[in-house]
Image 1 (tube, helix red, strand yellow):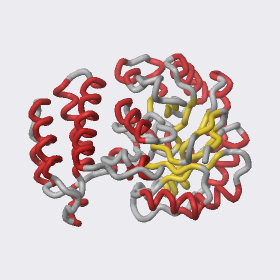
Image 2 (cartoon, rainbow, N blue to C red):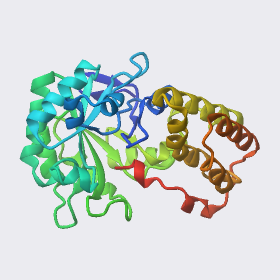
Image 3 (cartoon, rainbow, N blue to C red):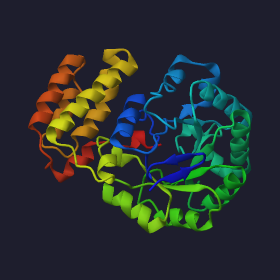
Image 4 (spheres, one colour):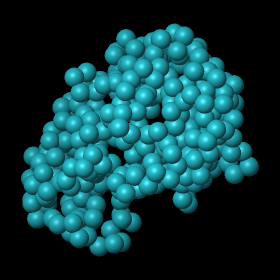
Length: 337
């Protein structure tokens, strides 16, 4: 079942969420290879793009043979600066631009970006228009349901963005004030589907399993389901959604080692790569016997070879029957802005 995404046709409705510190090239390529229909980058600073900082430009690296369409997520608050930054992204190969209008982090919102744009729908729409005029690329956006319980203005945002030519609108149906507390209100997604005119509506929030993804699609009527937490440590979720098998223990082990190797190559410095990959090891091991001890071990290791041996040993022995309270030791929130 292909889905229209502006000028593109996605092969099915299941896409990877843009996640801070996660949706880097290695993980996006892995998710694409597992069957994800679209993998947008993590949020990239417009000001960083304009300064051409080495750290920011690293976020633009992608595999043109695998990542198509290559969707770049940008955050910022000023239409002209966002348009200029999008031009830089296009020069680096971006085929679609996504605007982050949902990040609740204060260092983003205090500059009028992220979910602060929920407080100014006309400015949000002006950013969409400016980017499209400057690049000619399709523009999408990701929002929350509103700033707080008293200002749930997702329908107003959708109207302004639709009028501005936004091709798709992803919604995380919690307010900025909620953060990640409570349950995502999928009725928000249903409401947007009911009132939309042209935009594709992308549902997001509390999708942890293939069953959750299918249920969101069926109950809300959204065009696409954006999977964040459910893909952390389990990029195979996309293959399962397409009718494929869960990973065998050997495949899980080899997949983790391959991801680690690709991450080291991407970062370019083994010590830094080992540190930044620890969160992935926590997610990959979650729910497996001995996961807590494994995480404690690898969090103390600094040498790549030692981590590789620990991964080999753990995943060869682990089976999927971990203790129920194991979840408390795994933090997903840092990735889900």
